[in-house]
Amino acid sequence: MTLRAGFVGLGAMGLGMARNLHKQGLLSAVWNRTAEKATALAQETGCKAVGKLADLAPLCDVIVTCVSADADVLAVIDELLPVIEPDTIVIDCSTVSADTARTAAHRLHKAGAQFLDAPVSGGTEGARDGTLAVMVGGDEKAFERAQPVLQAMGKAVTHFGASGSGQAAKATNQIMCAGVIQAVAEAMAFAKSEDLPLDRLIDTLGKGAGSSWYFVNRAPNILRDSYPAGFRVKLHEKDLKICREMAARHGVQLPLIEMTLVHYRRLIEQGHGDEDISTLFRLKDAMFAAARDSSTPRHKP
Image (cartoon, rainbow, N blue to C red; front, side, top):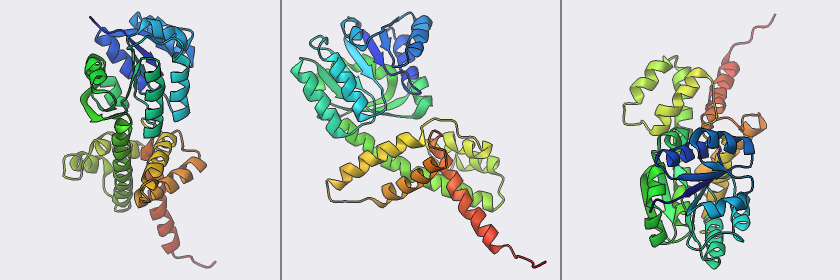
């Protein structure tokens, strides 16, 4: 029997993911806080746009959520609880804390439903193309039953263990991303200061040992001096604060997290919080500009 999937949260990532569920014949119904987005997708795909979140539950065997923060995830769960059918699987693709995932799983378990924390990585391109990396925690039988839905959204779908382990894997990813973002921003600012042709540099280094998905897909933003939101600074700041809290439970403070949070706070204060994380280049470039200004001889009139 084909699973009926509902989708909650049609933002930059969720819209592409929901479309891929439709392509596989799985999308039954959608809900979004801004109703116009749900209505537009329903008109495009033929699925049902529900006016109330609670109306989604009877139409679905699996409900996928992709929202912004821990409080949003728990609010969605609490609204579904009174009406959710037994054995329904809720797959949360948001990035939240492992504790929030375990709380959601506990609440749904009491209602006879299942919860999989399944945060994703791969940017808006991966969401659009169905090539996301999906990191899953939760009951293994639920994971197996949800395979058609998970495989429709991602190309690397991995079960890491009990509830919360998917979010722990995503936190690991977000720390790695912070390192890559810092390295690319500094390297490109250095290259600019050396008057290198950045277009040729990006093409060449994109094929070298120091390349990464992020470099290939986001370094061109630096060349264009335009940072459209693929992954917003504000959202990565939120994620790194989760990573900080998780590390603190082990009595550890990670320097990379702390440095990146300081830089993100500066960018947000400068009005760049809704830009893509590649906007970190602005701060690195400013360092070289300040150094040039301080070394420029000043002639007295």
